[in-house]
Every structure is written in C-alpha cells, then in structure tokens.
Image (cartoon, rainbow, N blue to C red; front, side, top):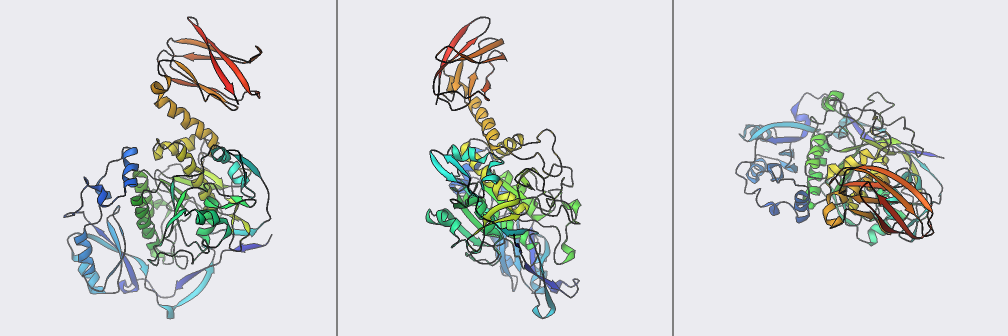
Amino acid sequence: MKKLLLLLSVIVLLFGFSSTAQFSKYIIRFKDKAATPFSINNPGQYLSTRAIQRRVRQNISIDSTDLPITPGYLDSIKLAGNVTILNKSKWLNEVCIQTTDAAALAKINSFPFVISSNAVMRLQQANKEIIITRNKFNEEISQTTSVTQIAKTNGDVLNYGNSFAQIHIHEGEFLHNNGFKGEGMLLAMFDGGYRNYLTVTAFDSVRNNNQIVETYDFVQNETSVNEDDPHGMFCFSIIAGNWPGQFVGSCPKAKFYLYRTEDVATEYPIEEQNWAAAAERADSIGVDVFSTSLGYSTFDNPVFNHTYADMNGKITIIARANAMAAKKGIISVVAAGNDGNKSWHFIATPADADSIVTVGAVNTSGVVANFSSYGPASDGRIKPTVASVGEGTAFANLNNQPAFGNGTSFATPNLAGLITCLWQAFPEFTNMQIIEAVKRSSSIYTTPNDRIGYGIPNFHKAYDDLFQQSVLLKVNIILGNDWIKAYPNPFKGNFALLIKPKYSGTETFKLYGADGKLYLTKKVTTQQGQAQFISFDNLQPLTKGIYTLHHSNILEKGNIRIVAQ
C-alpha cells in the first residue's frame, strides 16, 4: 500500500530570540477577579443550563474559576495602546493579546492587577524565514480496501466494514447493540483543522441530522473550520463516521463541537492557550466529553521548550486547563503522543494532565505500537491511562475513500467515542466514576505499565460494572418488600441477582428448566442486610423459555421464575 505522509509546513526563523520586539503575542496573567459584576450565586450569567446541571448532577460547586475575567481589567488592556485581545481563559485568569507596541506592553505590566506578561508567539517576518517540511503529527496514512464486518444493533444490521476491529477490541459493539451510540451526549474535538468535513461522504449522517452544533477556529478567530489541515477531519470520522460497508464510528449519534486550536504551520505555546479558550467555551455550553489529538513538547523557538520534568500536570497551560475541565465534571480524552521510538520518548502535554484519560496505541491484535509514547508522568503518575487502536486505525480520507493510519491521535477519538456511549448509558455517575470503570475493565488493571497504562478497556465489562453499581445505589427502590430479585428478567444470555439477605450464611442457587433439568448450581456467602450482586454469566446456551431459580439457606428456601429470550 502506498504510504502518504502528512507533510506540514513549519516556519523556521533565522534570527536570534533575545529582543522583546521579536514577539507579537503575549499572555497577560491577572492577580484576582476583584470588582467583578458577576456572582457565584447567579451562574446563569455565564454558564448554560446544561453546564450548570452537569455541576449539580456531580455535586460540583460553582467557584471563582467559573467567573469571567473582570471586565474592567479587559478594558484597561484594550486601552493601553495598540493591543488586540485574541482570547481569554477565566479558569487560568489570563488573556492572550497581540501587540508590537512596547509602550503598551510596559503600561500593561505596570497595572496593579497584572501578575506577568509572557511571550507565546514570535513576530512573523516573511523576508527572514525559510520553509522546511515535517510530519508534525508523526503519523502515517495508507489506502485500503473495504472489509465487511456486520453486527446487529437493536434488530438492525450495522455494517462496520473496516472499523470493526477497532470497535471489537473493546467490545464496543455491545454498547451499540444495546442502543448506546451517543444520543443526547455532547462531544467537543480540538485539532488543527477539519478540511472537507462538509463534503466527505462519511459525514452525510451527521450533516443531515444537524449533529454538528458549532464550529470555531481559535487560531484565526472565525467560525469556519472546513479548510486548513485535514487531521481533525480524520479523527472526527473515527468518532462520527457512518459509512455502511466502509466503517462506522465509535459514537455516531452524539452532537459535536469542532474547534481548531492548532496552527500546523508553526509550533508555539499560544496553541495551548487556544485550547484553554476553546475548552472553556465547550464547558460553558455543557459539553460532556473532550477529544484532543494534540501534544506539545518542543517549539519552533527553543526558549519555549518543555522538559520531561514539566510533564507533571502542573506546569503547562494546556495540562492545567485539562485538569480544570476534569474539575468541572468533563471527561477529557487526550493522545499520549507518537515519540516512543524518538529522542523525546515520553508523553507530551496535555497527556500529563491529572484526572483525564491519556490514550496509548496498540494494533488490532492488542500489540503495543512502537511509536506510542512512554509514561509515566514526571511525578510518577501512571501514564498512559489506557490504550486503543492507533496502529492501522480506519478513517475517512480526503478522497472519499477509507484509509488506515498510525498514531495515538487516531486511538484517542476511537476511545473518546466509546466512553461517551458508556456515559450515555449511566448519566447518574460522575466523570471520575466513569473513568474508574473504564480503567477497572482494562486488560492489565492490576499490573499497569508505562506503555498502555491499565491496558485495553472492555466496554462490556465496564457496562456490567456500572450497571451493578447503579442497581446497588437504588437497591431499596428496586427490591421493595422483597429481598431478592433477578435482573434483567426476561434475560438474554446472562442474568444477575440483586439480594439483600435476611440472614448471614451460605445461600445455594440452582437453575432448573421447565423439564426439571438442572443447568447450574452456585453457592454464595451472604451477610445479613448487606446488598450485593450475584452474576450468573458464562451460562451454557439456554433455549427460550421459562426457568426456575431455586434458592435456599439453612433457615428458608424459595423459587424465582425467570424467562430466557
């Protein structure tokens, strides 16, 4: 197969970096939010109803980080001279400005409410630059032919095509088969552009169903993202694609927010600030899940370079913004990076952020991709968190043909989509409870490592885990005056018992068919008044019909009628 590299232009400037005048974009940090007209007690001024409900549902308090930056501070910045405010971060209490006016910058630094001003972007001088090319995302793309794989979804036939393997490695089709394909969920993507998403066949469904709610380019400060780099479009198709016979995405029914925060022509810290501004926009709308296939370690100007020691989740703009998103009840899913076989070697920020899901790459057989970046975070936290298919991942190409690609950028949206579907099934749980269930379901949960973290998640297991937790939270309502109940009933394949025993001891369960045949015997130690789940899985195939589950202990016995479908 012919390999196609993503060749991206990067500007390399040939002059020194000592003069302040050589920079044109700065981050201005504020001391406080004094004299703000906004109130914590009136969050409807700056947060949508959905954003407020997310906080209420997860018992998250509105605090000062939710308050917009003090308007008077912004007015003072604007009036300081020839200054343009590019974007703002209320979480980090800072603004990004553009200016070459040294006097204005000096005046801004003199304001008593300003902590600091730091350059984040070099002044562009076209007559003093040369152009080189590099594959900024360190990824490969190759053409492929269609592979048909079919799974049933609620009685319909869902033809995954080339994407079956990347869904199946997580048993993601289990979620789809049970009707969880992202309906009612909001997912935001952050990337370098979504070229041709308005015309690529894979997005016919999301366009026709108006599932793309908002787009915005935080690099150019405009609404269009259909141009620029196609990397975001590739990643978007892995989540949202619905192209029967070619591939189906991991979360094809959600609603989407497409944000461009990455300038692929250069590499500067302003892109981290762009991400923070976009993330706050998504939070204020009420978005549930973020998918970010970006990472930062070295920059065009070496003075900005991060070190591995910086990868502790507390240093970089984008890591701190990701951690703040988690505090607001959002699940942020980010790429680990593609430097595992390069000199940098380790994860790149924001993969180091706390309380997020950092995704490493494996192939469809579960073998770790050699390019997948190594953890841990520099403070010793387990990174990556988990892994998904990032070697040979199927997605939509610009030429309206399916393609395969290599990169943790592609593993990330695959997993972000499935996590979104899982959360759809259990909206009563917090972001951290969902993340913990994903981790517990993973292949090496008890022995995590620095390549794939806790391993490859299994969403069937995660679903069962959360289902049991959900039922236990509602045990008294479900049981009523009973102490034992089978669920689901009728069942397909497997069922479970919810019990709150009257006595401590050993409970014996025997499953009989209508003809009196014994199919299963199980003994369980019980504790009086302590609710617990008893799973009856790995059953031999049962024909449709009525079965009797006999239960007995030293003091009493009884029967439950259950139905196999």
